[in-house]
Amino acid sequence: MKEIKLHKKYIHYKNLKTYIPINICKIQKNDIWIEAIIYKADDESLYVRDKEEFLKKFSLKI
Image (cartoon, rainbow, N blue to C red; front, top):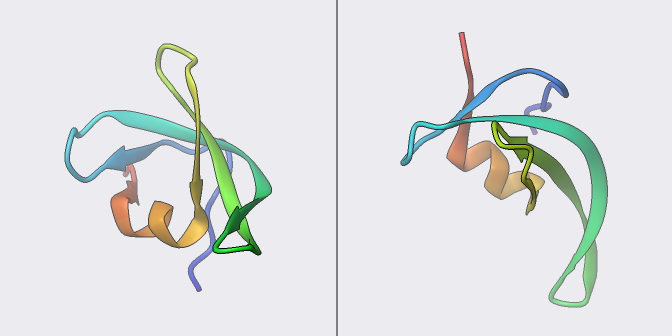
């Protein structure tokens, strides 16, 4: 699986806003612990998504 670069800017595929992954954590999905990404928006709001979903919906900003 592709690796996520922490503290680098990513673009959301749909809203085209910039987000920055700041850390890795674990969340439960169907009673199984999986890797997840904590990321922030420009306004400093924090979000969490599982790693697989993050990789599908975000691309590294060039």
